[in-house]
Length: 319
Image (tube, rainbow, N blue to C red; front, side):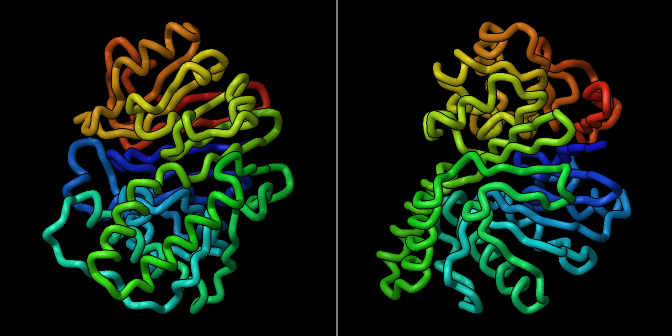
């Protein structure tokens, strides 16, 4: 049996995979405490609530604050066995980047996430945690041979070029040049995020992080024709779908990880109208929207997560 749990961390992503009583984590949500209002819960508090103190693996899909920074807050009580990253730039033990606070929030958030990413690699090295470039692996089995994860995006060359750009920005001594490089890295981070496919016992789930279909290779589209679960890219903003995506999408459930305030045009109703027109049988679930008329599958009693259980016979959703 496999379980996939989309934690309600608000706007970001934090996804637990459970198999044979073992847990893995994909992304960790934000560390901004103001994010956790209402039904939302931080990764740290969720793991403590569920008494989870060991993770067989942690995967980071890309460098943005709402995907990386929550992981930094669990290191004092959670043991991590293996760390999987889309790129491993040579920036170990470097000082944190600090450009002051007089910049837009998204840039400052990216710098915070880049520092957290770098510090996590350093933490892994110092604590003998195995650290792998997941794009180089391509296919791996982090919870045993009958649970397989495949990297659909990005390509190896795409990821490697991004790693070299990170190294260049971290080494740059001219402040103005450094800021321009960091702005470009922040702008391009989504396009370099992981798209993962998890397969177990005939069931499959695609987790698209913030990597949108306009950036996908042709082979990636073939994996959304007959999936059980798809985590919609980019929090359900308008770029989460395009014509090529809509022409072939055949999934049973679509999950959107986004806060109920629908900031940045996330959980955009036009996206779900287009999806329903393309495939009337798709069922929609939202991590933070307990009700979203007319799209959400139904009101959930469990407000802290969207919880799928893949049994021998069916896919069950805890409502």
